[in-house]
Length: 352
Length: 257
Ligand SMILES: C[S@@+](CC[C@H](N)C(=O)[O-])C[C@H]1O[C@@H](n2cnc3c(N)ncnc32)[C@H](O)[C@@H]1O
Image 1: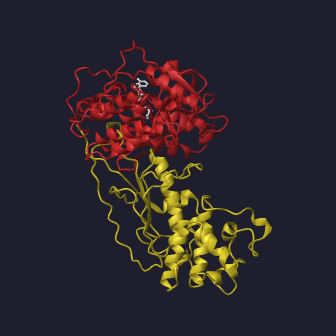
Image 2: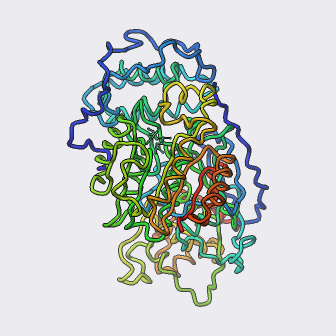
Image 3: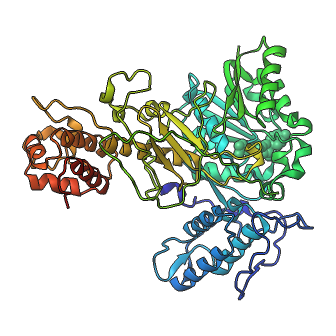
């Protein structure tokens, strides 16, 4: 697939800023440790919460398949890795399959050509199963809509719920040639998906305050060849958008919306590994959403559309209520929209 | 803390098996129960799927859930079994479906690391259920399930045919071998089972076979083919062969092999 090919640009900017730690191979010359910590009974959080970066920060599926491994060795890795999966977590078998799909250029050849040494794959797998490191960080991508989005520690893994925002804005009249903002773009998933559907005049301004997000979004924009349509801007919410004030056809945002008090209770894959900056919505989770609501009317042009993702029912109801009362003179058709699990996940509306 | 998935079983009422075909497919993977979503005015139903979204989940289990003639309970399809579902766009077909997905306990969204992207579509007018679990994104599973649904509709939904003055519809002509004498030059190259346009042709072929009570030689005459040539076409696709044989079995005919 052409979209999966490595961009000609070197991927050096994916390298973590901190100095390289020693190679972290958990299991050299040892069978995979039997899992006392199953994926369902998490161990207590590690004392050192900073994740150990991979030796090679390039997403697995983008590395070159330069490690020949005898088919028998690969098969025995597969067996050992599968043995680590507790019966109560069958989804991990799917992850193992996907890990091998991402790792092997042609899994049926002998020797198989892998994109990482077998030792590294073992270490990756163990960290997923035992340390609850999200599978998407392990392989460095998430499949989202019809995209394969590169991700890494420091940027939020795009969620399946969010896939729907692209379909929503595509139905807005004049969508294709409008200017759009994706505020808090993270991996750039939304910005890339939108850009791919835009017409000649269409643009996306993708804003994030996180440097890692800017780097990863840049990579994804390049991989999908939409750098002509997406402009990535580093800064806080509306600040980098002064020059397009009043010109936007729409604003899309999936801002951090989890109430600070709820952060300690998050599942380990999220709470231990994903960036607080992408999750923490402050008191009641509304801090950023309220800021976004306030700034909306000055950036949208008349008739412009907005969609925000929220924490669900209560937050959405609250925002719909607030916007259609306090800012009734600026907006109309403000409503909550359900996600696939029938949670009122989105708030949408139009500027008058 | 692990967040267990709360799975609600979709309890579709068992459908009458009075339809000619009782199609059962092997389940290749244990099927996780999916939550059923009632249609809701506020729910966002994505209307467009990528044109490029060919099913990559050939091993996605799908279960028939029985079937019956279309048009019973859906508005706008009051013509009994004659609705051309396969002529509908993906958007139109999707609007006739209820989508089931996993329902996680708790608030979802940013709170959760995804475990499942399984999608189950129930086509309301026919009761046919198609699902896909193997793709890594929700979107792709939905596209796979929809393409699976088209195949199942072709296999299960029989529409009456008037044999008196029968002319094969163009979608059927397109899947016939070039040597068919009723197939004009302008029909173009023969469309094979891997092409998404095969389903409508397959449906029309099964309609015809049903109308001639399973007789391959009668159908072959109407299609300007030898009996052998039509048999080979039917045998070229596993699901078509299975459906044709089930239909023949109902008429007391031997299976084609
Ligand atoms: C929940 S993530 C969404 C990421 C991406 N749009 C997606 O849906 O997958 C929220 C994003 O907002 C960014 N963010 C947090 N505070 C911000 C601020 N003040 N200005 C701009 N972006 C911010 C975070 O860095 C993070 O990338």
